[in-house]
Every structure is written in structure tokens, then in C-alpha cells.
Image (cartoon, rainbow, N blue to C red):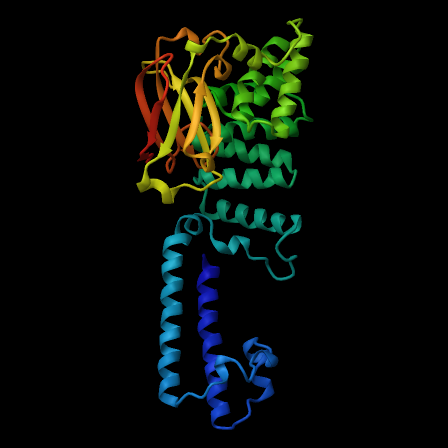
Length: 386
């Protein structure tokens, strides 16, 4: 947040100029024209006779006010930098985002290209083991459509991070496929499998897996994978409509019965006692840690050590307190429907990253051994994930 400190320092300078103007007027000494626009970046017409700056001040009062305003501006800037600017700027220096002499100003692909070059130079010089830095560089290359460089950079990040980050694995698979002429190969498929093993609900991995199956003629699997993806998407969104159409097309090609998408069919077939409903709310102590756009997941797991969701619904933190229903229509796997369970463990999680895998900074609440058919269940999100 270097810009905050600079802005606050600017406030102090501006205050000093306005007060100095008033002081000079009081003494009936005209301000030299050369002291305003060029020397201080303040247009001469900005100091008006009816402004606060035009009121007379004694030299002692003016000095006191200037000192107080300058002190408050510096202290405010320091506090804001401490609170808001440390975590990101310590990892990625702000100089990476400052254009070099002769470079285009911020806002275009040429600027993004320059940022990629600076980030690559920093990583090669001193960030050889910075896995997250290499991921950031790879995603920058993707934005620039430099897919071969993105794929090789993801490969470098993967060697450092391993399979712990499902989103990175899915992005790596996507970049590798694009660099391969939009063709899935053995490496693409392996990366998708790894991503789904790490996070069975990763949206990009599910979509890639469905696309792989569709391209290879396994339409039944494609329909099943898209069916897992659909409940994770915002209801009624363009993406959800596209996936619904994909499911219908894949089912038709697989020779499966025509009709609504498989998830809607399962919902119609589930009985009233085959689900769990209730509401999720956020503990008051955590209210300040949630943004309206954060993703909310509510999911059921089979009792035991399994972390894979049996059923899942998605919403946003803006919808809290959130009324949920989990039933066969939200099941992840057709062969392991929620209705086949006697009891499950429930989890509600606010995700900053938008993925269902827990990350530091996410917020969570859970209930164990909830009986199938339970109604009015109260889930409280009451803890940080560290």
C-alpha cells in the first residue's frame, strides 16, 4: 500500500501549501506564479479567496496546524500500510507494477507484459524457491496468451508446490492443453486426475475432466462430471446454462434417456425424507472477516476419515444467513447418493479462494453425525482455518 503512504504525505504537503497561501495573503505578499503549478503540482486557480486556506492565521497558529495535520497524515499512512499493505507487498514488491521509463502506462496488455518481465527477473534472481511467485507468473502468461511459457512456468511451480494446490494443477492442465494446440494428451489427463484427487469439487478440474471424456467419446462420464459441476455454479448463471446444455447433449450421445439434466432427474426422484435442510449463519465475532463476494459451501461428508463431499451446495457470503437443502440432487457421485447414508457430517465454509478445499483464512463451522431426514439444522460458522 505504498500509494496510501504517498497519498497521505500529499495531504500534508497540500495542507501546508494552503496554509502558507493564507499566511502570505495575510501579509499581503503575492505568491509567485512559479511556486504553484510546477513546483508543487497544485494549479494556481485552486486557491480561492473564499476557501478555508484564505482565512488569516497568525504565524504561530499556522505552524501548529501544519504540524498537527502533517503528523496525522503520516501516522494515518503508517497505520493503513501496516493493516492493509503488508501481506501482498512483502511477497511481490510494488516495483514490479511500476512501469519502467519508456513503457506504456498501466492498464493494457503491454503493461502486463512488462510486469511479467519484472516478475520473471525477480524470481530468477532471488525467488528460485518461491512456488507461489512462479504460479503468479504462469497465470500472467496465460492472461497474455503465452501458453508455452505458462505451461513451463507451471511445471516449475509444480515441482516446488507438489499436488497440494488443486487450482494450480487445473490451471497447469489447461495451459498445457492450450500450448498443445488445444489437444488433451496423457499429461493433461494426469494433471486433471491429480487436481480432482486433491479437491474433488474443483470446478475447473471437473470441467476439464468432462471435456476430456467428451473428446474421447466417453459421453456417459462427461455427463456425470458436468453433473457434479452444475450444483457448484451460481443458479441461473450463463455458465450453469451452458453446463446444463452440455449434460443434455452428452446424455443424448450416450444413449441415455432424454429429458432434463441428470441432477434435476435425481431431485425429482428423491423422497422427502432423503435430505437434510437447515440454515447457516456467521458468528458475530467473524462478521468483519467476510466479504459479500466470498464463496459459501455447505456440504455433507460420510462419517469417518473421508474428506470427499457426498453432497454440496454453493452460495455467496452475501446470502448469509443461508437456508440450505442437501439431497440427491446435490450429490457428487451418482453411485454414492446422499439418500444411501444414515448419517453424515455437515460442514459450512466461507472460502476466499472460491474452492471447496480449506485454505488458511477461510472460515468454517461443522456438525457431526447428523441424521438423514433432519430438518431445521443450525450450522454456525465460528472458527478461522489457520
